[in-house]
Every structure is written in structure tokens, then in C-alpha cells.
Image (cartoon, rainbow, N blue to C red; front, side):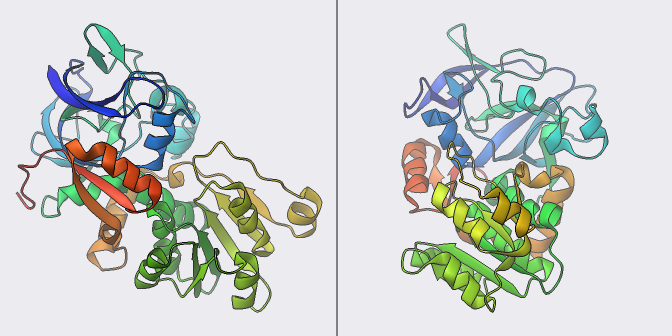
Length: 373
């Protein structure tokens, strides 16, 4: 079937809205989703400009939300009319998936970042030529088809336009803290970068019971929002040395945990130097940059750890509903980071994300959608 999608024709080119893209036919394992909205994530930008490459042309987008239109005959958990948030695809059959670690799926790259569907077929074509996909989802489209494992059912009374980023940005930040670092009540954490991922990590630190939750950024307005969302302290690293400020806030010790969401080499190194004895730093940005580590002093003598975390070590079908429960209780106000844009404004929305003007742009793909219906 013909759909409208935002296509990146070649490395570094702008998004182009096209109405001649052909969507692959459903398989018996697929669900067809009418897209309502999609967040824009920095991972989309990394692929658009070529920091990492799948292939071009490509339809990006991996923070989609929508309404199920059709289901294949082997689909068990969804039916037409269900509201869903889309996330990554895990095979469900490999050793790591069977251990309950889908973000470590042994076929994660092939299933999400190869540009084709899990069965190696094209998700989209244009004029007879294959168009690459992302996350077996490609939510920058009016309609898509995904596997059951891509989808999470969400309550119909919530505004579906707000929920898409739960499938990546928010679950990545919060999951890094809740699933991987697992701070205990009374411990301390500092988050470098107060974009969507960073603020999600910061709110998760508060939920976990950290008594010191420090947000680090260079934009005062973002730091003000961080305080509104639960930061006990904020540091503008453009105005003061972040490591010195964090040490001062923690009686000279440093924090138990840090999360870097910036991907900037100097900042990632600061996130390590701000740790206390035995602390752990999670570097979770999609970045081509590197860090300079003193393995003797940082990792050995100080008994510190530096880890990477993919997608917050999340199980979307568990973690997204958990975040929604936190949201309903006023503990995870992720929507305060969002700003809506029309689908046709995708390039402006992406630019506003890159400049920091907007924390989490959300593209409204179906403008006829009415929340709660």
C-alpha cells in the first residue's frame, strides 16, 4: 500500500515528505499501525547525518505511537483498535532474550540497524527501489507494519501523542538508572545533559530514593526544568567546573553514580572524575567520540566502573507500563519536556532538537486524532 513518509535520500540530506512510498505487505506475525505521532531522537539525527549508517534512502523514526489497524493471523496479544507505543525488536529466541535481556539480543544489530526487516525483506520501496528502515519500525510514516515484539499496548485514556518517546528516549534514561545502576535510597547521582534521556535518568534517580540528584548542563532554562522535575541541585558547567561543584555538594567525596547523555569527550571524562570511591559511570550517548581513561587511578585504585547501556536494559513491555504508572502518580512528568510539531515541520523540529531549543520534539502525524477516543 502507498503511504506518506519522511525520507532521507542520502547521507546528510534533509527529510523529504513523500507520498509515493510503498509499505511492505503484512506477514502473519505483523501488526499494521496507523501512526499518530513520533518523537525525534538524537539517534535519528546520528543516522541522518551519517555518524552511523544503515543505508540510504531511509525512513527513520523509532519513538512511534499509533493505533492498530490490522493484525496477522499468528498475532496473539493485539487487536484492531489497540493503542500502542513502538520500540526496538528483539528475536525472543536467542540465549540473551531467553534470559530476559532483549536489549542484548544476539541479533539486535541485524534486526534493528541493518535497514531491512528481521526476515531480510525490504520494509519500504520507492519506484521499485528498496528504502531502508530503522528498528523494524520507521515511525516517520503515516502507516507502518511491525512485529508483536515491537509494540507495547498502552491505555486509551492517555494522550497517545505524548507517549511515543517512552519507547526510546525516556525508557533509555530511566532504565539506565532503574534497571542497570539500581541506586539504593540515600545514594547520590549526577546526570550530565538535561535532554529527554538525561531528565528521564534524573527523575528515575529521584524515584529510586537518591537523596542527592544533581543535574549538569550549560542552559539555565533546562536546569530550571530539572529542578521542577526533581533535581536537588543543579550545576551550570559553562559557569563553573562541574567536577569541583559536584565534589563540593558531596562533602568532597563525589557521587555514587553518574550518567552521561552528551557524548562529548570532555563531559564524559568529567562524569568519571566526579565519581566517589567505587562509583559507576554510565555513558549512554550515541556518539563517535572517545574518552581518555587513566585505568590505574580511575578504574583500579579508585575501584570505579565505566559502563555502556543499550536502551536502558529495558523490556519495553514491562518498562513502558511502569513509566506510565509513575506518570499517573506525578512522579515522571516526561510530557513537560515535549513540544508538538506538524509532520510537515520535521526539518524544523529536528533543527530545534539539535540546537537545544526543544528538548523533545514530537511530530503529530495524524492531526485528526482526538485524545481519549
